Length: 442
Image (cartoon, rainbow, N blue to C red; front, side, top):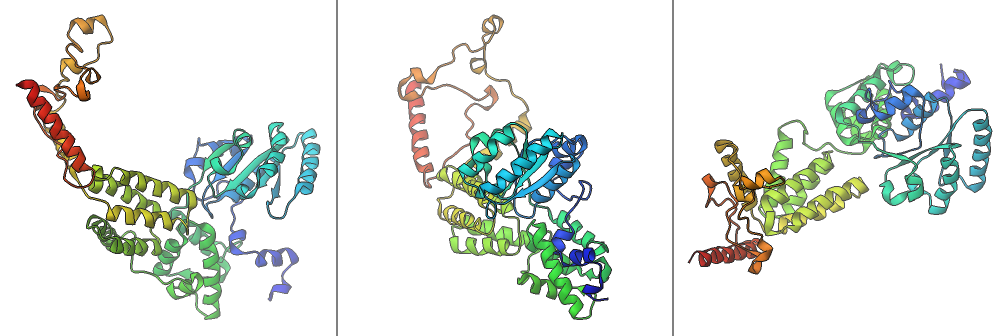
């Protein structure tokens, strides 16, 4: 039977892209976003009660924003209308509002779904506001950009902002398996299987985007059928994604080898090698936020106070990536890598932390010296709490010789700054304070 022998409805279904055919129609079919959809969580409760409120869904492509909007509207028995910044204008909005007012009078709600709401300018967003305020429209906006910067404050204050996460590798894998087994909407009628290597490659290259995974799977399925075989393998998926697999297993030895080489290149002040290992990970499908977390740890552990700005740069790179996403998010990561690789190095703060933690573990909870204790009651004052405490701002150079460690640890030195970068100035300051202490004792 060829395509035109199918009934018209079935023909339309076949012609739909696989990602559209597999779009979940109910909350139980939806995969991912458990922090919003698990029992007792906000969206699960909205679906259960049928009571909607205006929402902004903020998340990366392929995380389910559009699907969730339609599921929510259906669960509430509301009419769902799509509105586009590109193809819709004021005339279209007036028509939607007129119809929404008619439905409102009949006791039925209208959900206005605005995809990529960050593309709408201020005046366009202002047009929604009165009808959202009056409850005639329930606005569900979807955006890949931070709504704090892209959505006007009056509209934002009337919407609940919910953050969606990229789908995990396990979640992408569940969707792939479901698609291959679904004979009605998916590829089940073709009797296809997928090789373990191909499946892993598809999951890695999708980088949490369900649409990328299903589009690639659809193309690979077509290539497989044209070869008169029933196993989708790595070759067809490489062709579908136009990507070659790199030798990098996120769950295996190569993952640890590459991240080790990356950190050691940063520690060794080699920006070129650090950039190479960065791109090895990114191009192989590593989670960029995993890399950003490693940069933040490295900035505190291996640079520390030699360049306190390094930690700020690492955190800013993480925030920038979260804001921008791929592919442009690689740029702030690369900037952070070159900054951290070329920064002066010191692990003095890290070593001090380990030494202090060792004393805490071995010596237990030593008593706080009386002069350092707070004395909020008269009884505590009579017991000597806070007695003889010296307030540093009452002394020259905002420094006074005073013990701050427990009696058993007096004289202990945990933090010994290096001569590297900013720590050289810290070391000079600490030497000055030590001299002041000696002078006060003589």
